[in-house]
Length: 327
Image (cartoon, rainbow, N blue to C red; front, side, top):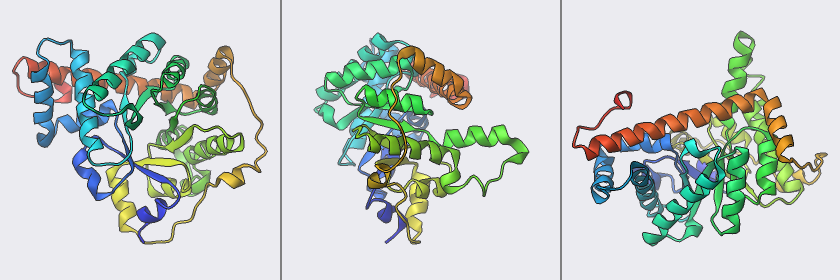
């Protein structure tokens, strides 16, 4: 049994890609997308017709509506390949506007339902700002399930659990990146591997807290840099993994042990905590890594959303497809 199949015994495997033609080879249950992955996909020749079709179908619509249609079309194609759910992201530029985030989520769900996709098969991805978490609280009460992304800190996870969010995506690799960069030449890769990896440690703490206090929100580790991080989180509820790392898991037949276990979490010494809005903002502010990576992530996703809009405008005006640097 290869490591991918071993992992599937105790963790739900999710594919982190907009390239739906790659999915069948790995048989994931779910799939996640984001603006960067969709931007990358639509610039590939095999996906250009899909973008052109979406633009042609909505010639007089605002560009943000066409973007939503593109995102949902990719989601539809992904759902033809997987049995579970697809995550579709709200524009990161709305990360600090609760009402606008709710409205955009309504738009995405309406497009899915018009296409015959039940809302139970869709997770709306929202940045884990205070405003985003409150938007998710509203949406969950309406039966719209959410995936809170760009999550780097314990306070974000606690607030998401309290809001009744369906799923969170703590970013393992980006946490690792920050600590490695901060350490500079003093970084010891071997000493910071496995369970000592700062990204792995963060997700393990969140998983343990949720299981100890019976918080139903699912934990999905994301943003992996190497197989060691994935192996160290075997047993997490879900792990969303790039096609490249899925292929590496598939190519290895070394034994894979479960590392996270809900019963062991019950014996942890963690105490229950609650964050008010001021308490949340202060706790996030005190975490330099989380503050910086959250802001950086929102900026990056917003920039790629702008690039995607540029490609749509170019297609609408009949110009040749623009490269990211040209829009």
